[in-house]
Image 1 (spheres, rainbow, N blue to C red):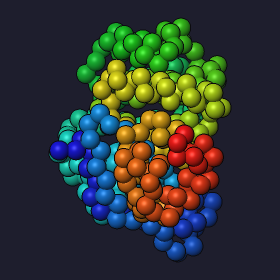
Image 2 (cartoon, helix red, strand yellow; image 1 turned 120 degrees about the vertical axis):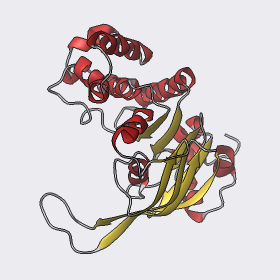
Image 3 (cartoon, rainbow, N blue to C red; image 1 turned 120 degrees about the horizontal axis):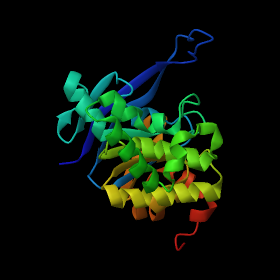
Length: 266
């Protein structure tokens, strides 16, 4: 039985709608009838161009967005029908690491407040236990407890992303959606974060949906790769199969635009 199972997910948005203007009235299917399973302990890499629906799909799996239709199950539990205490228990197991480390951390909060916030929301832990866990998670991501008293603006982008990862780990989740976690970072810093995520997966027995537009990064991390285009899942397979024997024209186009992967022997 897969740990995460999505069936026929659909999500529609009004085109052009934002806080400054009303929508044009045209509807856009950001996710169009997508089904996907993720087994415990694996990393599924989700790739595609900007606007392909990758981030929307990740948020639907965590129920940060409500789908128009479809089903999501986590460890055989129905995520979309869960409410109250059942939904709270599910949310402990399912967390997200956001794309922008500069925007995802509240600048008014100390690192201790940021990291402990999930435990405060879910309750049941003493202040001492919260701080002890925060120290553990900071060490796990390569920072020390001196960071607890500081504010986000005092850290580099890579350090902020480590703080965001520590926050995601605080509830000891089983499944993490990593939504373009290195796209806003320099290449060398991004490589450090990718290696950290790989290390943490082994240490905490994590399952990942790793969202990225970078095929080389996904190839390094993922056991399987899913390819999205215009809201649809156009190809899904083992990493080597997708990289060396892609079946869909769009996948071949993505590979052709990636110099590091043009040579099948690489």
